[in-house]
Length: 632
Image (cartoon, rainbow, N blue to C red; front, side):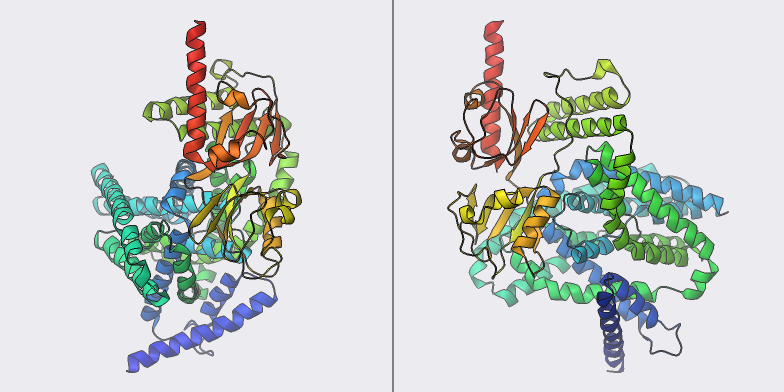
């Protein structure tokens, strides 16, 4: 009973202080996360004149639960299908970032006079960003529908996987004083095997079971079942030697493929917020002001290296992956911090007695400094990009845009290719990079027209849940004139599991409708303000079987569309989709009017049933090949 009383007293203290500090932060328009960290500093035992917590170990357990529930919630918002869609770009970006930061951290450690092993561990500490910090910052700033956030979440998932391999690598190097490639390959193979096993088992077992017992799942039961599944996967991940947070994310991603995802998110929200608050307070509790003063020099140097290194490496990695330059910089500014995995790596070095006592307090201090800067860096991304882009050399801007547009087209085409097709697209991507940046004319793909290069499309799909009150309720799409007013298109309406693809202008909007909307960041932001005049948006990414595809008007039957307007083309009916973009002789038309007439060699971008659009495109491709054979 005394132990329970101590735990309750500590929890009451941190929540009271956190509530007061976060209210002040809100009044000053500062991020709430910073308030939690400040609250943790204030209730730490180092302040003798203030009430302080007594059971630090108990609070660490609560903090670990906060990480688990945050990652479970992230998995619910970022399903496996979404991860696969940004998988290649995220893998490239994360690889560049981790390699660069490992190198910078190692060099910084050597310059500070640290040993080889200490420098290697420092590189690992600086290479992994904080999922929890970024997730909460995006929520507070209302950025989760922005184009770059899916890439950031993908990079964070890849980083967590890399962090597991890093722990194995650093452990083997520290114990044996040499690199054991076999151990690393075994860990990578085991990780891949369990991820595939979890994914297949979850997809084949959990959704059917939830559908079968759906009538028995009221809110209370559904919450208990989902938490049981989450913690069960956490236990399994820990049992096989992986991160508990990874297990939580995997289960969230599995449940994201079910129809009860939104209900689980709604039920989980208060639990997640409570434990997340404890986690961020615990970060503040780890701040040792005396150690911060003692290591002020290394902390300042490493904080600068972390911010500058991560912004540059992530931005370059995203550009290499073919993402637009604005998206690349936004991603870099978002990932410029270290977090929970960094503490684990530093603690591992201490437990193996291969690093000095300075690494852990320095890692915590750098984490606090970069966490403090994260919201401001994210806010500064857009104005910084505008400042840099206007002053960049014209030829550099054109080359980046040409490379991004070419890579985007190759990536879209690669989703329809087999293994040989993937390698063919990869070769074309390398050739495109050589032609644009290395000025190798032999590698340049043959262009059909002399149109100027186009920048990558920045339009994307976001989800918005219609609130129970607002000006849009009960009105038809014709009355709302959404495309005319905001420049966006509603590609699909999900109404209680009933899907209405490419809704007509007479379709009406009702409460709790889930709208899939396509547009660029600016257009979606305007639509969000209209839909949520005084409410926080509840939105998500969704590009499952209904998403963005391209169709070239060359070869029958696609060529039969030439000369017809969008309204009379029949594409809405044949693809369950909408024409959301046209590339025509170097000119780009986003969300064209329904009276627009198709012309020869137009490249159409459609949001619709992927299978139907691909079938139309493949039949056109077969027709072109047949015509070529006849002429020969």
